[in-house]
Image 1 (cartoon, rainbow, N blue to C red):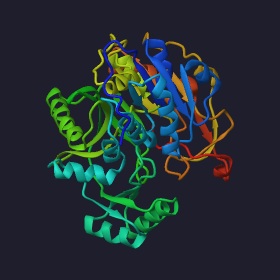
Image 2: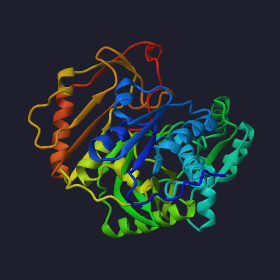
Image 3: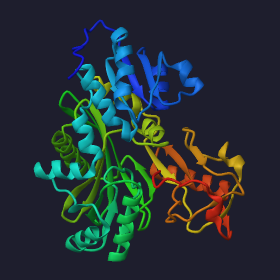
Image 4: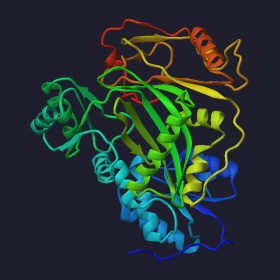
Amino acid sequence: MSDNAGPHAPGDRTRVLVLGGRRTVTMLKERTGYEVGFADEAIPFDLLAAADIPIEVDFDDWEGVLAEVRRVHALRPFTAVVSQIDRLVPLAGMLGERLGLSTGITSQAAWNCNDKAATHRCLAEAGIAVTRHRVVRGAEEGVIAAKEIGLPVIVKPRDASSAAGLMHCADADEVFAAVSDILDGGRDSALVEEYLVGPEIGVFAARAGGRTEILYVFTGEVGPPPKFVKLGGWFPSALAEGEQARLGELSERVLAALGLDNWVALLQFILTDDGPKVVEVNPRVSGGQGVALIAATTGYELTLAAVEAALGRHIQPDPPKAAIGMYHSIVFEQEGTLWYRPQALRAVEGLESPVAPVIEIDVRPGEAVLAINHPRGGTFGRIVVAGTSREEVARDHERIMKQLDLRVEPLENAEKQVDKPHTSCC
């Protein structure tokens, strides 16, 4: 059932409801004349002041969220509901459907993307090559599946993205432990997949009115097994024009098979010897400072592209500020105490590019860091550099690293001083 609000007349004011997400609210207020509703569980004061319609909700209570949104919608109808948070995208789809909005992702398409087993099923039914896989509900079942697929394999949660919870397993014991960890974390199943070898390519697409536009393609770099932490990559990709065109056509087929329209998606491919295979499709904008890098090198502000897609429209890019960029995740081969020059976070001398770099380190000098493949290790910072050529970007990156002077001193039991898991993504 839905509140049949129907499509909005052209003269109606565009009013967008954002489920979580500071950047989307900020960009909408800075760059558009849209009225902005913002729903979150605990709205910070600055966003409380920025949003035209703040709505505090409990995202674990979808019917409660719907009731609050309906109450507002009856007086100030929303034109679209958007979110860039994985677990809230299906909620955005449900709200759009129940409010009777004419555009935006459907809840089914959202689940088809977020549930990696459903992704594989939809694509296989459409004749699109995907990884061989099994859904398992027990550790012993996982071992059997891994042997059928062929070791080594990848074990990951069905609902995770960007390598979260992913483990490379070379033998049965590792499979048993990885599946057990996922199930012990409260999930009722896990995904066992074949291990693909080849370059990782990311494609970000906006689909509106049944037409897909590729906004950017990038070549990703990942760390060693078992966690495959994302180390960053180059924007745009150095793939040949023909190969990029083929990936664009494949992306169109993938999104159509998943039923995704009037939304955006980040597609991950592995270029195997047998051709590209789809690894996962995430119905959201890429996270972290990659958004700033993409804006600099393509002219697309991705959060606005996502909003326009949810409104059934494609966006025109601004003139890009740079021709090429690099994203570098800061990781460490060993645990210990991290030291660096904090003044380099604010200014680096001798840079060639006119585009200011982004330099972030998530811990202060003298604090502990963990190795890249530690269960709570991963990315401890990031460097984003954009410029006129790959060579210029590489030189500026070298200057930044030299002036940061990162060094790790041995520290016994460093893991006891790291109080939170660090991301496996850039």
